View (spheres, rainbow, N blue to C red):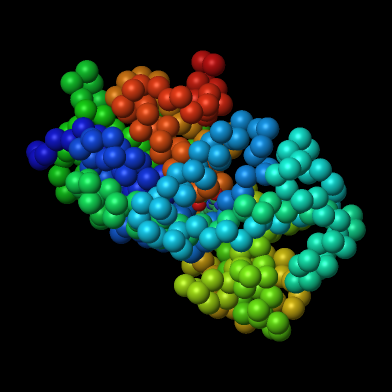
Length: 375
Ligand SMILES: Cc1cc2nc3c(=O)[nH]c(=O)nc-3n(C[C@H](O)[C@H](O)[C@H](O)COP(=O)(O)OP(=O)(O)OC[C@H]3O[C@@H](n4cnc5c(N)ncnc54)[C@H](O)[C@@H]3O)c2cc1C
């Protein structure tokens, strides 16, 4: 038996690292437990880049959360001086019709572009009618590994303990507090926050809700011509709605060579502890299909290909709530495959639950009641 803490954060990934920092800033004695290294490439938060944007969420349930997440990302950049954590590139959303995915009532937050206007401004995109574009000028590229590193560094400076390579095996909670058994030691605390991403279902199996994990892949290629057209000065982050799913990509950055592209779809269900992480020919073919269709001039040599995990609830809306049976336990995930952009705001909601038992950030749609068998 070892030390006692105010709060234990299980999982030091995207949201867990931000939660460690948020809780530490509130003056709490925090322990973060991570089964792998910090950061690592075994879960849902690796690959050097994630997209964020505001326009599609204006008028939706996510509006206050994305706006708060933007504030918090700007805040951590300011506080840490880690300027490459968030790079404003703009975000271009393309679909084979106008006024798609939420771009209806939020004029003023994006530019409405016809296919020919898109081609004129971004000739790298091979897009024709009936495609339309929505360009969000505040769209940005976030660096996930840099964010996790920064949050952990800042939290540890405030006294947080983070234990890597420490797997949580079991936990219990009662009126006196929580106990967490790991493969090293057992820890106690007043409260616990689960930020376990794709492993949430394994750690919370008694909840009686379904959490599914799926395998995804993405790749980097070297453009065949006009390399400068794929650099951030000329290229935004982007998504293209396609019959196979949504292709997405990023301008080329300096920390990894090549032009990154992936296909967003539901994915192939897997066990996060036992699946084939090695990318295969099918993974590459998904990316090649998108390149051939939309970026034939970039369809060059492969520089890297990786697998990654999405996590899903049945409605693909995340869970941010207190545990329905344990007041001292806060649930912060799964984030449902699109959560990096919201991570610091989700961490703030979790920290609010720990500190005050409630949050003022409007987020009722994230409560677990909607998923429980009796509701
Ligand atoms: C290919 C891909 C592309 C994506 N693109 C985007 C994007 O452009 N924009 C966006 O907003 N989102 C995107 N997402 C989603 C986003 O990256 C994830 O939703 C988010 O990063 C998940 O964060 P998390 O903290 O929930 O999980 P993770 O970062 O995976 O953290 C969970 C942590 O818990 C640890 N853990 C689990 N069980 C235990 C245990 N028993 N003991 C100790 N530690 C444990 C894990 O090791 C892990 O480090 C993408 C995801 C993928 C896979």
